[in-house]
Image 1 (cartoon, rainbow, N blue to C red):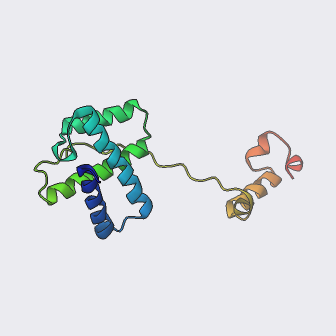
Image 2 (image 1 turned 90 degrees about the vertical axis):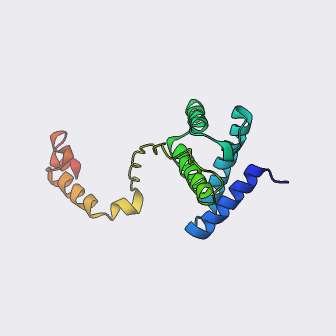
Image 3 (image 1 turned 180 degrees about the vertical axis):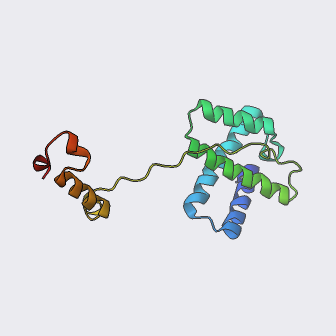
Length: 150
């Protein structure tokens, strides 16, 4: 038998699938995040998703920080919980969105992937670099002679 929180999460994720076309992986990640949040609310605060306040949500975010959750994971959680509360507001299940005043964390951009092997060897930048190394005008000019580079 599903709990009330499981039913709410299931209904919200069905709406996400219909309206946004989220992938199965995203839906499953949202389900895990929201179910864990609902469990934490019940055990630590004694409230349900429908009775959650901004104080409860901030307490959960502080707990996640203490548990050293990844920033991207927390951003995903906030995206899921914001969507859930907006859905509940739209469906007249709640009257106030507890996530309305919470800002999304600033995430750094991921570093570019390093090229290796055939990808790097075929790159025009590689050919220019190799030409400069051989003729002595590149980065190794100060540490060796042009003949040593070639």
